[in-house]
Structures are given as C-alpha cells and as structure tokens.
Amino acid sequence: MTMCRRTVSLFFLIGFVGFSALAQDGSAGINQANDLVRGYFPTAVNLMYAIGAIVGLIGAIKVFSAWAEGEPHTKKLAAGWFGACIFLVVVATVIKSFFGV
Image (cartoon, rainbow, N blue to C red; front, side, top):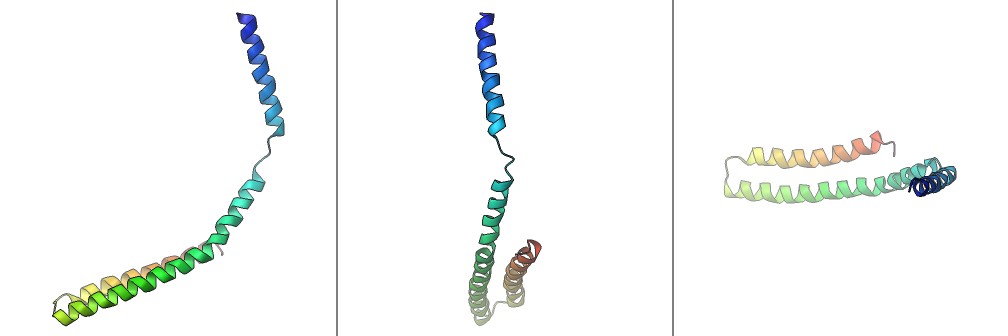
C-alpha cells in the first residue's frame, strides 16, 4: 500500500516539476490585458460624455416642466441636475488623465 502511494506521489511530483518548467512568468499576458483595457478607454470616455448629454437634456426638460408648473424648489432641482452633468464630465476627464490615455 505504501509503495503504491509513493509511486503515485512520485508521478505527481515529476508531473508538477515538468509543468512548472514549462510555465512562463505571465508578463506577456499582463501587457496584452493592459493594452486591451487602454484601448477601451477612449470609447468609455465618449460614452460618459454621451450619457452626460442625455442626462443634461432630461434634466433641462424636467426643470422646465417644474418651472412651468410653478413649483417652489425649481432652483434646487436645476442645481441637482446640473451637478450630475458636471460630475459625469469631470469623472470622464479625470479617468482619462489618471490613466494617461
């Protein structure tokens, strides 16, 4: 019984040593993933700008309808929507400059 265990253990040890000798450090894969992710950044930034424009249009319509109905808190609503649009644009720009894309 112990001879069988030793043989199996020796077989796995030889296999592990053989596979680890063939293993690479992975830097090529990491560099490829880095290039792929950096390739998506301009598209993501443009998407953020487009979402900011859509949110701005929706906010303008909502603020105008609230103003036309005579709601008392129209300034607060306008500030909130304007802040959301500015936030989206700033986040897109910061991400772009932070990652050096």
